[in-house]
Image (cartoon, rainbow, N blue to C red; front, side, top):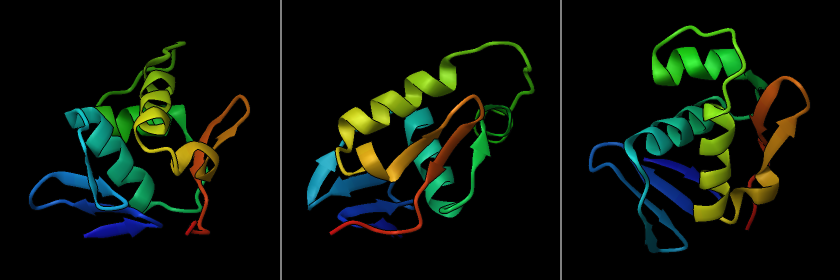
Amino acid sequence: ALHFGAIEMNRDTHTVTDGGHDVKLTAKEFLLLQYFLEHRGRVLSRDVLLGDVWGYRYTGGTRTVDVHVRRLREKLPSLVTALETVKQFGYKLTDVEGP
């Protein structure tokens, strides 16, 4: 299992809970959250996320990553401040856990 504050991810059962409450994520949201949890504290570019999570290389202007990050923040409120936007580059999940 992966943990971040009140968030717990079980990769075997493909479940996520936040404060003990089940959170329903799409397959890509789950993989994106897993990637952030496994690379906590690192700044991850949109291109890296597209390549490693979506499995393709695309250097054009796609908003796919941004949309999925927004959905994660909506479904997991503790990520609102912990999942930081790095202007004109990508995202970083802080390495400091909340309560």
